[in-house]
Amino acid sequence: MSWPTWLPLRENLRSLSPYGAPQVPAQAFLNTNENPYPLSDQLQEAITQAVSHVAAQLNRYPNRDAEKLRNKLASYINGLSKTGFTFNNIWVANGSNEVIQSIFLAFGQRAALGFTPSYSMHALIARVSNTPWIDGSRNSDFSLNTQDAIAQIQQHKPTLTFITTPNNPTGGAISITQIAKIAEAVKDVGGLLIIDEAYAEFSEQVSAVTLISKNPHVVVIRTMSKAFAFAGARVGYLVADPKVIDAMMIVRLPYHLSSITQAVAEVALDFKDELLAGVGTLIESRDLMIDALASLGLRTVESEANFILFTGFSQDAKQLWSDLLKRGVLIRDVGLSGHLRVTIGNEAENTLFINALKELI
Ligand SMILES: *Cc1c(COP(=O)(O)O)cnc(C)c1O
Image (cartoon, rainbow, N blue to C red; front, side, top):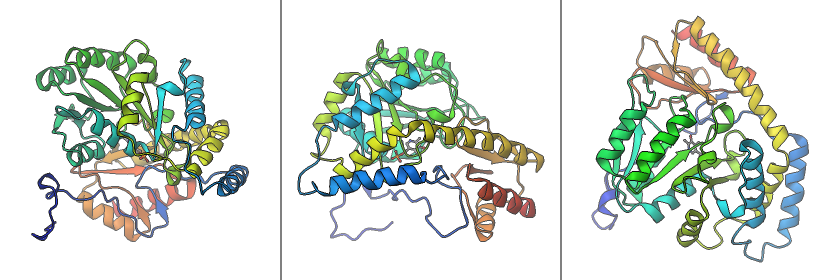
């Protein structure tokens, strides 16, 4: 982008482009890893009631500390991972992207390291917050080699080391044993290990939240955008040692989480069993999609998330992406040559995608 000279934009921002996954009309939206299933009528009704209750108090600022919501999130995590967290271990914000930004504002003193390809927003938010970013590497099959990751941590001594597991955009996950080894190396260089578990509910792996009580430098980011079918509400959170939460309180904006957001997120957590049942359906559809892609002669990267990275088509990725869009199917070109990423949609969307692919490859 070119900027006019009168605009005193920060030097380090001049070369950047805004985050911009295309939001264009399509019949199948398989590009941003959203949950394809709308909330049930019952949950929609409960949300409407909660909002109507809040509407009567919108002249007042929200509860600044969102303690009720944080308590509910702690119980949710405790139920999944048999941990003993309280609201003191949880910080909640407008999507996990706000959580990531706050982590950089608080801790981005030296460099931050991530293992690419991974979630592009880690690097982008680092740059925006003026934190030097280091692109670490993965194996050529996109898996993460523990010894290699440790060597990169020892070399760069970052304040912040990011690991996304299951990884976006590739889909693979690492085990808790691997995370524990990497956590040791991060501790030795005096940094924090940030585990982005946006897709944890789709995976069988033990969550890194189980490491926190013995490793206060491990910080886990979660979101309600994917498994919870709640992307539009913008709710993300982190699970960490209470001292990490105290630091988040320093950098957060006052009243950052609206009364409406807090109220509707509390309601959604009351429906967690129903929402997690939808995750089971998506996992079954993921396995069907892997078979369907294989039967078209395509190769898929192992996935423990609600999306699949695939390769093995003859045309250029950009070309196939736009040919699919012409047929009403929006997927994601993640900038990896020869690869495209498809989110698991509902049955109709998945069928439309596979049928369009059949005609194109
Ligand atoms: C989708 C995603 C997020 C979620 O962002 P929200 O701001 O919570 O919607 C975070 N991390 C990764 C790796 C993601 O893929």
